[in-house]
Image 1 (tube, rainbow, N blue to C red):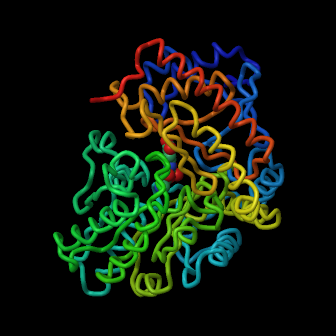
Image 2: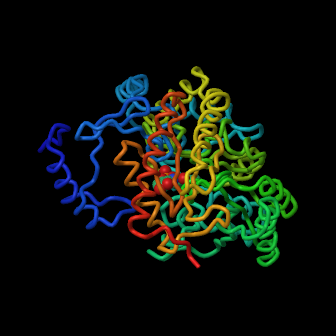
Image 3: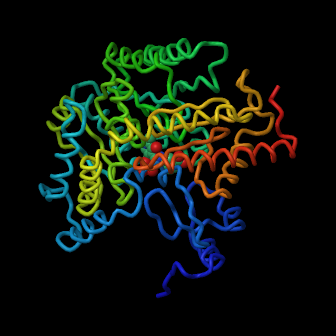
Length: 465
Ligand code: PXG
């Protein structure tokens, strides 16, 4: 067997990668041409690539490495668990200590009245579980027709057929026969892009009222649930106006619609509380979790289920589960992650130190000619780029053109900052220090300056008419 070493020349690794590895969400031929960036090590908030560059990871991997890289305790727990019990399932009347301990710990951290956890291997799997949970809940209660689920355009809930259908990404629906029947999408509360002449508050209310309109159109007797991220992540860090969530909560209560909060990004400290639902003041029946549950050190996800739903589901045989539901190594590592988050007061660090510092420092970029505004909740932020801030104008070129230039300038300045369309996104590890936040913002400004020069040179600074 050949050994893939970190010390091979980058070009050789890239050629091998291109020969055999199909990348997610990529145009693989174009990627092969360009060569994938090879990451070899990571420590704290810094990645090292195969050329030895030290790159500040402003995205915490894929919004998940909440405790930062290089925590050896996590590796030790994994090794210990692998020696003791590397695998056993949780089907057929069996269980094991890591799954028991993790479920207990998650229930302790979850909002009151949410005490049962169904484990999955990822956020996508957990949202597939949620489709079956909410439909089974109403069926057991004698209302099998109460099965439609309402979600939002530009939501991200995963990439399997079920979770991808819940999501509202048109470019995903265009491939592979999605969405599945019974899923409906209302508009998102993105004031910057879609708010027109309304104030933020008016717009938030009007977008929330679309939920009521959709329920009335479908008939409340046919609607099982509404699913949403407390703050949209992959859609571009869309922080909803303050009026949005209270109205959504009122509507879900009024029509007896189960509320699923997808906490895959917001959960485990990212918004300054354990869950985004607390930050946004909502009372979900089910919360989807993954990512920060293990800080990405092991693949694990799940659904935190409220007592009422768990009571009803528990009265029937729920014919659903995954080989790796509650995987012992993943569960043990997630438990260690929760210990670190708690003992090192990382959620408090976010609330009291890191999030206020990130906000203050990012806001210094608001004067940049390309930056429309700085939108931030806890440790997730977005800078929409615009040729004209006062009118919130879009660029004349295709959406994403300027964002991609800026993303490349960030990489060239050793900063990972994503773009979603023309929004630049930041979501660093929660343990980031004030000094590293300063470095992040300094590199972002340099990347923005270089983008501005390039955009001007190419004559792309024009607004769409
Ligand atoms: N829900 C939310 C809110 C997510 O952000 C998932 C579910 C699915 O989780 P899994 O573990 O199945 O990937 C996610 C994942 C991006 C990006 O480009 C975001 C995610 C995944 C991949 C890319 O921002 N979020």
